[in-house]
Image 1 (tube, rainbow, N blue to C red):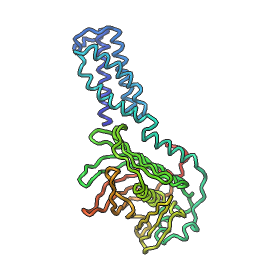
Image 2: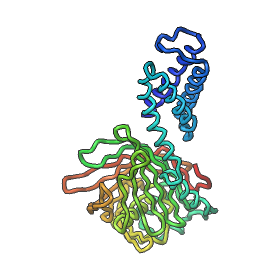
Image 3: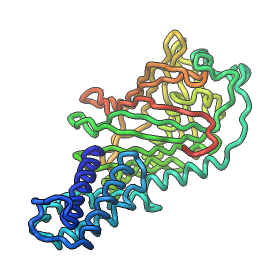
Image 4: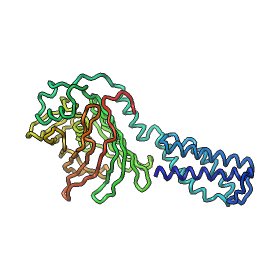
Length: 368
C-alpha cells in the first residue's frame, strides 16, 4: 500500500510537468489538445513539484508528508477542471491521494491513537529515576525454576526495571478461518505505576487500522480504528481490565524477567520446571502457570483469567497461553525473540497472533 501510494503520487506529479512543457512550448505535448497559458503552466509545475515532495516525504516515513500534498491537491484539481477534456482522468489519482491525506491529517490530530499513546508514554517517562541492582537476596524467596530463569536471563547484577520499550512485527487474525494480517507495534510498560501502552498498525484490504491497548491505574481499554476515523472495536470494563492484567503480567514474565521480584506477585512452587504466580493490581487478581526448560528459559505462560472478544462487547473465557522461543542477547539480558498468542477453544487451539521482536530497551529515559 505504501509503495502504491508513492507511485501514484510520483507519477501524478510528473504528469503535471506536461502542462508546464505545453505552456512554454518546450515540447509538443500532444496529450494536451487545448492551449495552456504560461500562468497556468507555472501552476502545473508548482503542483507537480509539491506532489513529488509529498511522495518523497511519504516514502521516507515523514508524518508531515501531507502538508505539501494539500496545496498540490487544490492546485491540481483546479487545473484539471480547467482542462477537463484532456485531464479528467487525473481526478482518479486526486481522489486516491486525497483519501490518504485525510487519514494522515486524522493521525496528526491530538485525539489520534498515536498521539494519545505518545502523551501517555511521556507522562510515564517523566517519572524516570535510577534503580538499584537486582541481587541474589532479591530472588531468595522465589521458586527454584523462577530463580533459575532470572539467572539465565542475566537479571542478577543489573538494575531493577522501571520500564521498557519494545517493537514487534508479526501477524494476527480475528478467527479460526480469518486471514492473517501483518502488523507492526510499539509499546512501553512501566512498573513503578503498573502501566501497559501498546500501539499497533496494520492494513486490511488496503484500509489502515490503528489499535491502542491502554492499561493505566485501575482500568484498561482496547480500541481499534479504521482509517484513523472509524472506531470498530471499543473494549472496556471489568472483564477487559482483568484480561489486560493478565497481559500486563505476561509482559513482565516474557520481556522483563527482572520485574518478577515485585511484591505484588505471590509465588507457589509446582515442580522443577513449573511455577504458579498470582499477581494483583488495583483490586484485580489473576493467576498463571509458568513453564521452563532445563536450561532455565521460560517456554510457556498459561492463564484462565483472560477472555476472548472479537467485537469488544461479548467476552468468552478460554485458557490463554503464549509459548515462546529463540532467546537472544540484548545488552547482557536474554529474552525470547518469538512468541505466539493462543486461545484454547473447544474447537481446538486458535493461534491468533505471531510476534517477532524487532528491538527492546530497558529503563528508557526518552521517547523513541
